[in-house]
Length: 625
Image 1 (cartoon, rainbow, N blue to C red):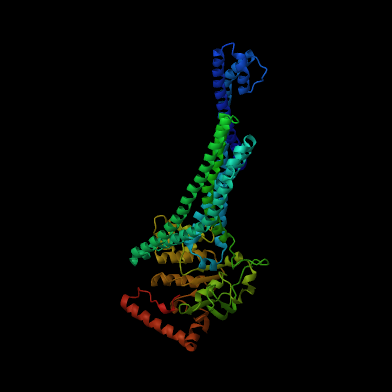
Image 2 (image 1 turned 90 degrees about the vertical axis):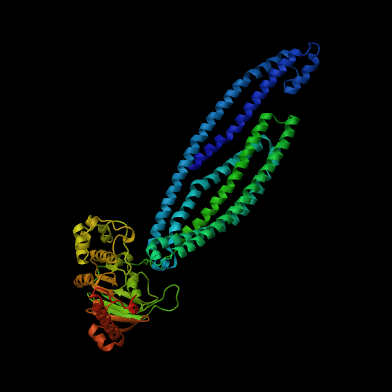
């Protein structure tokens, strides 16, 4: 639709120079006719027979005309000039109105279409980012993804809404102008025609040079945005460690890199535009010279020359527009590559074509010779791990940092796939069931608590937006969160702020537990879920969890053995392998490593209890994830 409006507006624009030429010719011929009539009156009657043939020949009238016929023609020519002037002026107004109307329509529709494209691209990007596997997010920084969904999409939109329309408009205007010039004055057109290929070659060279420059600019913008995003997210840490100056220096280096790249691009285009204008001025000088010669020789009227000059501007205008179009095209091309790099990215974790929904599970989980490597490492994080969790059992995972505890719980909801071996739930291979049906039956409380802007109720009901207030309150009570929620003036409607900034670590942790419990999952994963609470709160949470884990298969990572002492099965991990397994009593007798951890924690608990009356949490950093 906008391109139809563009063509109509361009045709209206092309008609104006012809009208201007007609006005100039009408006025000049009318004035000339009046001057000739005045001159005829001054010529003696005896000399008219000799002068008449020359006058008739000069004006192109038939050679056999009499003086009376010539005078009648000159009078008519002089009197018709005002009518021609009015007619051409009205035509210019009509064409200007048409051009204005359809130019407005083309801009409106093109902007509307470009906004629709940007809307679709942003939604597609947002959806794709959620579908991509954890390994993709491990390799890409948040700031870079944000730039692609905002700045890169906007540059693509600008080219679609403005640059592409300008390109089509310039081509239509150029083609229409050349057609008119060739049909009116071919000789003079051939004089300016060599300008076009020269200008197009220049634009092609600059286009090839500019695109990689714009790509590097977007990469540097992404790096700068990443630094900004990380500092805003970690502003408390920056201030706590007094790293403001060093972070400012890091940002300045990144901003300087962006500025240098922008200056490089500006330098290229600062050379382009004067070069193009120089080529255009050469064409204008040639037109003035050869057009002036035709006027002198009488093969061109003053109005035709003015008409040709205006059409010549219509040739130079697209040439100037091509410079801006190439700038937008270079930016849009670089940004489109970055946008479609995400849209075309392949997720390692997807539903297989023959995947089926996972039926309601009982909770039997089995690891069968599972080996796992991260994408950037050749060394396995897990090596031949095998164990079975029967429905309703609680499985505790203990081990040093890097032993593979977190990797095991990440494999259960299929955040990653094993490099070797397989996982099953109730005998179903996780690769053969749909992701939605799998993850909807697993409740997770991660070590790093994430809350979203909104109310406390909305965050608890994040996994079940249809949950009633009574169900939300029940989950909050089970997670020992109900009392502190009611202490806020707005209760469950209290805004939590960005990333839960208005809540303490322990409060956020309890909301995360309530969020998982609201799902009423058959499989529960608790990744050190009591690490951010005090001992008193931990006791309340642990009692609630013990009650809620009944009948559910639970996987628990904990810093303290005391929190998992009643687990049905404790797995002690060491360097990606299960070094010992069994109940608490069995491991005390069979595992030297487990007994050593247990005894050290007893000593630490006793020491801290004497120092601070039991209010300080003992933390064994050597065995924390």
